[in-house]
Structure formats: C-alpha cells, structure tokens
Amino acid sequence: MATQKQGTLDRRAVMSTLLDARGDSLIVTGLGSSCYDAGTADHPNTFYLWGGMGAAAMMGLGLALAQPTRRVVVVTGDGEMLMAMGAFATIGAKSPKNLSIVVIDNEHYSETGMQPTHTGRGVDLFGIAEACSFSTVQTVYTEKELGAAINPLFKGTSLMFCDIKVNTQRYPMSIRMRDGAHIKNRFRENLLGQKAFD
Amino acid sequence: MLPRAIPIRGIEQIAFVPDAGHAQLIRDCEADNTIETVSLTSEQEGVAMFAGGWLGGKKGALLMQSSGVGNCINMLSIMQECRFPLLMVVTMRGEWGEFNPWQLPMGQSTQQVLEHAGVIVQRADHATDVRDVVYAAALMTFSSNRPIAVLLGQRLIGFKDWSK
Image 1: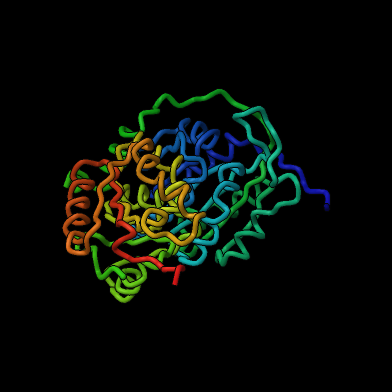
Image 2: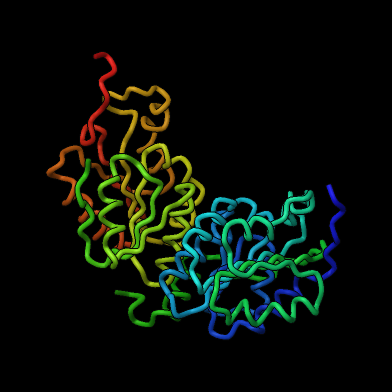
C-alpha cells in the first residue's frame, strides 16, 4: 500500500469556508462531526442528520431530484460515506446535475474514539466516485486547492464529488437543535412556504 | 403480475430494488415521463431518498420485496424521529407456497419488523383490493406524516409448484 499524504486542514475551518460560500444552496449534513460543525453557522436551508448513518448522500439525491433548479450540497464524513458505498453507484447512474457530495475526511471515526476508517488504509473515495460516473471529482489537501474547489461545488452544473482531507482535531458539540421533526418542518417551510402544509 | 397499482395523483418518484411482482409497475413507470424512477442498490437507500424528496416537496413510493425490509430498519428511524411520510409497497415472499426456504425467515417477520420500526402496516391479499389499499395508504401517509407499508400477499403473485 502506497504511503498516503496526511490531511492538515482543520475541519471546522473547512466547514466555515464551505458555509460562507453556500449562497442559496440546500445542504444536507451527515451525522456526527459534520452535523456539529455545520451547527456553528445555523441556517434553515441546512438539514442536520443526527442518525441514519449512511443516509446523507441519498437524502441529497432525493432533494436534488425534487428541486432541480437548486444546488444541493451534501457535507458528510468519511465513516458516514463509507456506509453508503451503494449510494455512489445509485447516484452515479442517475447523474443529477445539481448535486455535490463533499466528504470532510479525517480518516477516522471521531465520535466513537478515533478508530481508523478505510480511507486511511488505501481506500480512495476519489477513485470510487470517478468509477461511478461522477462528472467532476477531486481530492483537496491545501487551502489553495480548497479555494479553487469551492465555487464550483456550490454553483456548478454537473454531478460533483470532493474529498477534503483534514487532520484529527476534535471539537465540542456546538449544536443544540436535535428535534428531527422541527429540523424537517423548518427546512420545508423555508423552502416551500405554505405548500409545506398542503 | 401486478398491473399498474399506484394511481395516486402527485406521486412523482418511484424507487425500487426490483421484484418480479413489481415488474409490470416498474415498466409502466419507466414509460411514464411524469414519473422519475430510481433503481437502488439496496432498499435502505430509498428510505433516505424519499426523506430528501419530501424535504423538497415531492411524493414518492418505494417498491421492494419482503427480503428488502430488513435492510431498511435503521433508516426508518429517520422517518419516525422526523415524522416523514413514506409509502412502501412490499411484495411478500416466504408466506404462501414458497419454494425457497431461505425466504421464510424475513418473510415471516416482515410485518413485525416494520411495526417495531414504527411503520404502519396494511395488507392486500386479493387482486381486486390492491388499488384501493395502496390508494388509501398513500392518502394516509401524506396527510399524517407517518410511514406506511402495504404488504402485497404472496398469493397475489402465485408460487412455483416444485412438487410437479
């Protein structure tokens, strides 16, 4: 197995950079650190998953198909995405042009004691996304690469995948909003207005 | 085989892991340009997908065989916690004249598994009931924001008689 480059970016700084660029995009987070990090800049166009590990990418697909004129960006972790390997294939086969999947990849399961994930053991999400027909695929290690990647992720017109390698810095949970029905209703009312209640 | 059994106005997305019992319906939906069809690698993907679809204001139906119900369990926690609607249409195996014994463990526990996961379960065992039962389940799930599964009995589809 080839030696891999180490991630040096800070996960919260990466999330902050992503959220600053969100525009009117619709965001779905995976459970765990991505949910907590996104909670540092709460927005009604963010749907926070607190459970259902492996759901984020497919929720993104459902939302992207339902809202073809809006950009949908899934922001999740490497462990969560590894539980959705089939979703790479399902999404690639469907190829919605308004969906980006972003993995903030620290190569570990942060929430459960920093056990290593497969992404630190030679498993390359870039290669999986590429083999599953994603149009634009990249791995980001540096601020400069992140800066170049960000606008297309939120404003692009093709199916995109971006693996952002970060270090293993942990942070305290920063989001208090946990009630799933509330998060869903807030998101739908903000997006759909009165139609949310039809 | 089941005919076009989902005559519900407003259903715009169908997702499925194929089953012979759904084959005609899948063909009909693929031929209908008002319906988006998504082929899944695993049934649980459909549960998450329809949560996203409902977030975006669309109604859908998830088609699967009873063996796929077990794949959905943890994803169904999203529906219960968030009060998402979900219409599941499940063709049953392992319950009537089943030739393959490997289908029995999941087929015999399908209803209980769904109920334990917070899904309301309804059944159709006669061809003349299918349309009404699916229609009524669709009305109820999308007006109550609670997941409902319609089990289509194996007797509807028939079995292979391996004794002959």
